[in-house]
Image (cartoon, rainbow, N blue to C red):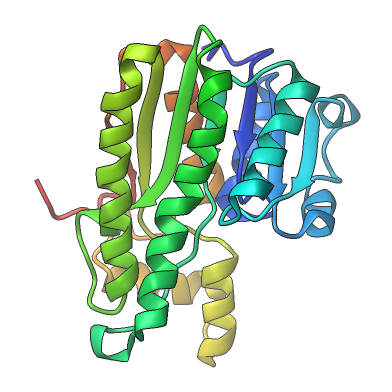
Length: 262
């Protein structure tokens, strides 16, 4: 099925690895133009170096700190000027803080809330004037199932994810009259660099595939494995697509069936 993304211009934050990188690559494969950013532009450029030459011609890269409003404004302005406008935004910048409530400092709480909220607000605020001009404007916020199903080991991250899901619903309501859709993709356990690093520091004698299968079993994932960044990218593109034109304020779980809420 043609997703209708060819020729569209999409911003992707946190694009140097994992879900952000997979999303940028999938968009380019669909014929879209991509403005990709990360804090480390050199790392981002290396990550995108393997793209086919034709796709490289449709990607713009930049260093951008999504917590710095001025940096975001510059990135969005430059991207819009170079790509001729903006049709979509994928807010992907983020991380998880593995700590229980009693182990989490006030500074860590503030940092988690700031990252989850302002990494989206800064980008959306800067992009909205350009999105208004698009006939198929769409924003997808990459979130986590933690937003509805908190885990004690991720106390601050769970709360911050819930705040982001709430914010996303508000943005969807506020921007719908302007023709801008806002949706969320909520992740379960995805095989990205974060889990690879945890495996490497675990000291486990198991191969990663065995270790991750045990992790999936422990977390009660019905499909019995971690997801992949490419599987998330497909969900993101589906919501970005003009074919999803009557979907806004929704969230799509990509978690192998792990959700226990109704």
